[in-house]
Length: 113
Length: 131
Image (spheres, one colour):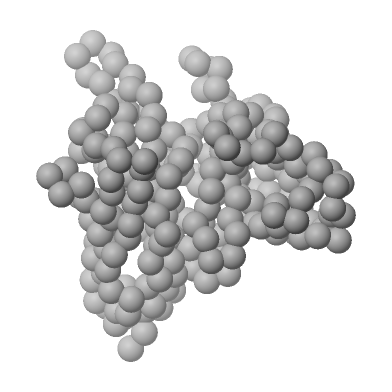
């Protein structure tokens, strides 16, 4: 199985400041034939299902504010929120869909400082 | 507009078999590349992928649970069914179904769906395993 490890486990950031969440996979999720990283990011608020934020490591899902961005390739990835808003408080998960079993990171809890 | 909704028992006893149904609309599970997955989440814990079924009946399972899982589809009813045998209290959690629509790779006459991200999720159904 590909193990996804996120850091930190929790993060407190002031409103308007930058939030950065890291995700590391135990093996590369870059598919060489199409040069795509099979990596997604999800946002989950209390009592709600996960919501897709970023796919292919850096493509923002429709309707997601442009303060959210994804970067990285191979085994190391980052989700950045450029200017934290109150509605961004949530748990964020990375996911690899390169191979089965599809696996998720343990989650990063993002709070307001 | 794509929607998915999970249904099934809220309480099962240990050793019983759980049967969950995902009823969806807004897409067809006969379209190339389309898949529906089941993912679960114990209370306060992380997401765990369980199983997936493609439009062409290709199925994939979590190796750690494969012996207990079965996923099937009924395209006439727009439903995907997950069964999990020998339920245990550690299986308590919220169970989600989710849609993905990936690319299709063909080699000669054989085509298969590629794994993809889950872009639409149901609201989830909480299953408690307790005697």
